[in-house]
Every structure is written in C-alpha cells, then in structure tokens.
Length: 460
Ligand code: EPU
Image 1 (cartoon, helix red, strand yellow):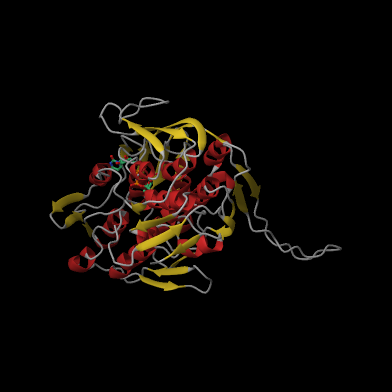
Image 2 (cartoon, rainbow, N blue to C red; image 1 turned 180 degrees about the horizontal axis):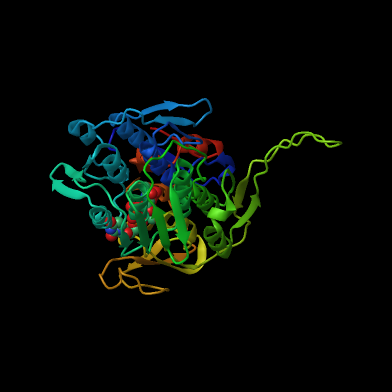
C-alpha cells in the first residue's frame, strides 16, 4: 500500500457519474504478453497498452534482463526487442520485489533463454496467502530445479525443459500461464489438465500462436502444447480490460448514473451483464465496426467504436445471490465493485467468494459508511467450496437499501480500493480515501476518468 503523504483523495460524494470513458488492453493480458516477448527471437509489438503501474513494473523487469522496450508510433504501442536478453543483477531485480506477482512468470522464458532464472519475493494484492506451489510443481515436472533462498527463487534446468503431463489442483490463471510460457519451447508435448480458460488466457494463447507456438485447447479444460525449437516476435492488440469495464459499470449503478465504456466488449462480460441486469441495471451494447471505404454508388462509412453503456434506470435495485468462480463464472475481480451497488438493492443479497479465501475484508469499510453486511465462514447460497471446510470467512449477506455516509477509508488492495472509491462517490458528504495511488496499478488515469464523469474529487 502506498504510504506517501499526498497519497489521499478527497471525494465529495452524492453526484451520479455521467459521461463516457474508454478502457484499453486488459492488465491481466498485457503484462503476460510482455513477458511472452522474452521468448521471441525478433521484436514484438503490443498495442493499446494502458499506462498503469503493473505495466511499468514488467517493463522495468524486462529492461533489467536486456529487453529493449520503447514506445511505438501509435499511442499505447510498445515495442519489445529481446535480441540481447541477459541475466540481470540480483540486487537490481530485488528493487522490484514485492511490487507485483508477474515476476513468477519469467521462470520458463528465462530458463529457455539463459538456462537459469532469479525471481524476487512476490507482491500483488493482499487478498489471501496467494501461494505459488502449483507454479513450482509444474516447473519441476518440466525439469527445473528450484532453490529457495531468503531473497527469492533461483531456478536452473540442468537437463533442459521437457514436455510433461500435468493436472492443476485448481484451474489457476497464473499456473496455467506458467505452463503455457514454459511448454511452448520445451522439448516434446505437454498436456495440461484442469487448466484455466479465462479470456485473458485464450488471448495469451493467441499471442503465442502468432509467435509460432502450437497450442490446442480441448474441451473440459485440457490444453495441449507441442513444443517448438524457436519462436518469433508478435504484433498483437489485446482484449479489452473487462475488470475495469465492470468497475465503471458498478460505479454507474451505485451512484445512480449513466456511463458509456468505450472499448468494453460483450463477449468477455456476458456473466457480469446477466448479474447487472438481475440487480436492475440497464445496459446497451454497441458492436465495433471498422470504417468502410467508398464503393460503387456508396459513400464511405466512418466506422463505429464498440462499447457498452451502463446506467441506473431509476426505481429500486434488486438483491441477488452470486458466487464468484473461474471462467465462465462471475469473476472474483467483479465482486468488490458490485457489492457497493448491492448495498443499494432492496432485500438480502448473498455473495459466495470461491476464488480467494480472504476477499471480503474490504466490507468493513462499507460497514463504517452505514452498509449492513454480515460475513460468514459457511458456503452460503451456492455449492460448497474448498474454503468452507477450511474455516475462511468467504461469504457475505448484504441487506439493503442503506444510505451510505462519508468516511475516512484506507485502501487495502486494488479491486477493494476501487470499491472504496465507488462507495465514497455514492455516499453523502466528503470522504478521504488513503492509499489511493494503489489504484494506478490497474486503472489507467482513474482521476482523469472520474473528472470526465463529473465526480468531485481533489488531492488535499
Ligand atoms: N493458487 C494456489 N497455488 C498456486 C496458484 C494459485 O493455491 O500456485 C490459488 C490462489 O491462492 C487462489 C486461486 O488459486 O486462491 C486462484 O489464483 P490464480 O492463480 O487463478 O490467480 P492469479 O494468477 O494469481 C490472476 C489475476 C487476478 C485474478 C485471478 C483470478 C493477474 C496478474 N492476476 O491472479 O487479478 O483475480 O487471476 O482470475 O492476472 C487483479 O487484477 O486485481 C487480480 C487480483
């Protein structure tokens, strides 16, 4: 959490958000695609990269490893040239320790490029212990030797990396990416069972396919990767950030506003849209359409930028029961922003968090603002999950509607941070949100976007 003196935002709440903003490439794809560039023998081009802290961290790490990263000709375009990949100085890498979880994904690519890898202590959001056992197990099965030291992980592959048969205990996004980034250049075939199939994973597979990889996604979460001896660079436009889009949608609903999110795409958000509609929110989808040149007897057409408009149609919102899950379920990252809107819905809403064991801590802040939320260790309203047996507080009942009032809030993690912001925007009075810089990790120019939507905020 950022602790600098100016790291606080005053939010004068009670004004519905109105207007248009744009989302760019998904944070959770862009950062992985940047790592994938390490595997190529020629430069890669990534378009529509958002200016967020996580991208800076990965860029810094790539540069430490000799990758030349430069801005391309178009706004948001990055060129990544891995021609001179080299081992980085451990002390320099350690500067990045604790700032992101992405470094763990450097393991496979660095082992392929250099024969060894050093990974600093991992950071990321404080939403549970977030172990890396699946990653380490997979890497060992490929033939890596992992040496844990107090400063981080040292990996080598004395006999090279070889394709293998793996089954994840849980469809982890990061572990699936680890396997993909390692298997594409391992010798032989890798079969991964119980893989994650989030849209960001499928998009990473698209990136790797452009590089020359051979990857088959079968039914029932099975991914088969045929290793190839060399890969080239790629040119890729990432899928839009469906977490950011849903966050602004929740902000529109909670404040009784109307927000058009350019760049948002229906196909990545159908589960969210169903829930948004069940709660009583309205949305309208515009499909992207490329410009068309003039043709015989027909004038040119300028093209349409796709997006989704989300708004509160008036009247009362309705309580819902929702359970977070791996794709195609309701994303865990959509949970915190939407719960703020659920405090305004009539009746009892039930939330069962099944992806992270500790992702309800932020509800305490909502309680301090007047919300009525009770948390439980039981698996409420859905299928029993792995956390019920292990006694984690991972279900919540939200009673509404309750008026929210201003409070002083401290941001605990990225998505909870955005939900605090939404709560402050929906509440009557002036809230002070501390640690607000953390939101820059995953939301590009959120203060500019807030201003564009008519929010009244200032840095005191
Ligand atoms: N898990 C293990 N062992 C492992 C790896 C994961 O037990 O080795 C457990 C985790 O503790 C968790 C579950 O598996 O309970 C799922 O974790 P997963 O590996 O799927 O998550 P991740 O790869 O660490 C990514 C996103 C998260 C997002 C999750 C789920 C990135 C950088 N992060 O994390 O995004 O919530 O997938 O979709 O892609 C965010 O953007 O704010 C964020 C937290």
